[in-house]
Length: 173
Image (cartoon, rainbow, N blue to C red; front, side, top):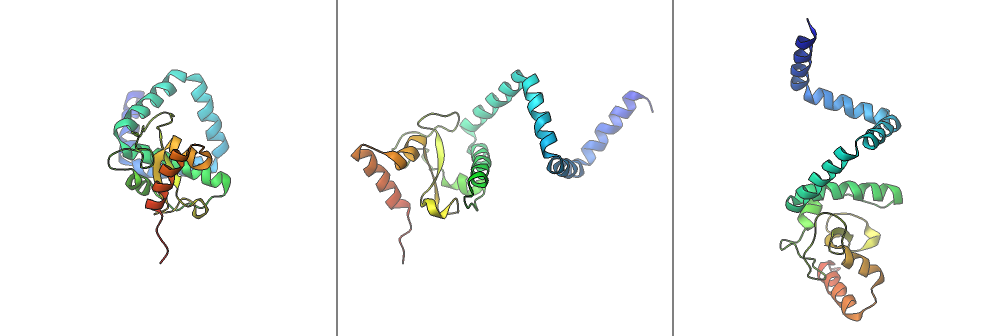
């Protein structure tokens, strides 16, 4: 078998065994976590243009595809929870369902932005912080509204936040 035939054979084998390869690669990355992180960072330093292009494509996709935004946000929520020891039991579907249908911040009424980091960027909020990120305890708010919940100064802003929270908290029976 010459070199070109071998490449064709390998490509066909990979296409037939995608699931098997995916499982192997996942196990390898778990077993060699530090090695793969180092290799990834090294590649990113060598290829800043490709990294920038990939990030830009992702940002553009998030503007129109809320599922992509929800999946990426879940990844961020998970790492935040693991780092800080916060309870979480949500999936990207829970985040996706929490996005307001009109795509406006429920607390401030401003249009939510689903890419980049601006005051109107969409963020996942724990309605009752002690419960963690669990179904029926999350909402999607603008970054500004989420920050204001923690340190608001203007009474009107606090009232808007309070109205939002009252409408979301399930009253005890």
